[in-house]
Image (cartoon, rainbow, N blue to C red):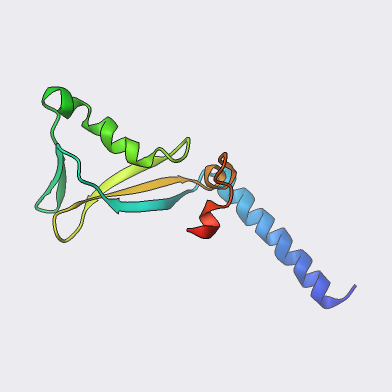
Length: 110
């Protein structure tokens, strides 16, 4: 067996182990980060505030979560940038990102 084929085999084996570990441990990766303009969610002194008063206020968490509905097990986090704008960061597992219906290779393009 030549050395090049042996190294290729070891690299494939190591890649399978790493990807398997990432899938088993549900490691979340960021797939989208964007600025959002949603009423009742705003930044004040670099802290995200969310109002819950009234009908729209009670739905504000649901409205924000709609930004991250691309994958089945997506989750999101809110933060503020230096201009006091709300930034949403959407995350999903590598398994969902790779095997979701119709989006198998989107992660290669983005």
